[in-house]
Length: 230
Image 1: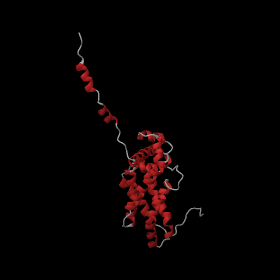
Image 2: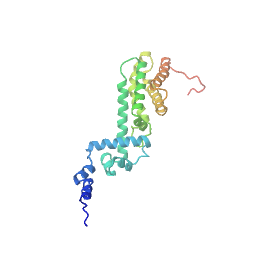
Image 3: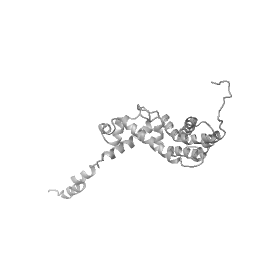
Image 4: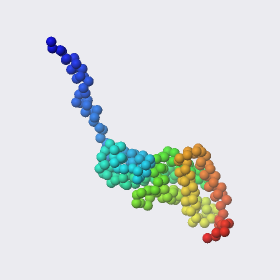
């Protein structure tokens, strides 16, 4: 007696995806060149922040993006090129935040604005700051923490120069004091990045307290009181 298995076959046919359905499931949405570039930058930024330049490979970047290594080389020429673009973007982001924060006001308020701008950046763009505080392996004059401090200090020099001139101090010394003040805030921010205590506003208040009261009692011609004079 023949067994009618048409119902079983029909059930299997219903469960089996049609060629059209299967192709829809496996079809990938192709990225544009600009979209692929942004994807690689995002992946590279995350890996550089976690592992540093040396600890990140083109193979890993490509694997996380789901592409082959030549695609990374096509967009950036290699890991160095990708890293340089990431660093440049972070530098511009931070400098824009600092520059935008320095609005008109009392010099002490300007110090507060600068401190908040850097702490805001650290809080909002943590990965970017982790990348910037590492020494850049790329052979270039920009992209290091030292050059970052220098660029931000340049924004502060003019403010200090006017304040020095008003007090009868030598405005030529403004760059030195700008480097010292910005360096103090930046290094404190690097420490705060890991501990996150006390709260941001309290950190800014203490930074400005030290900086302002030091400036408030500034000597026009500071003298050394120790035995070493040169």
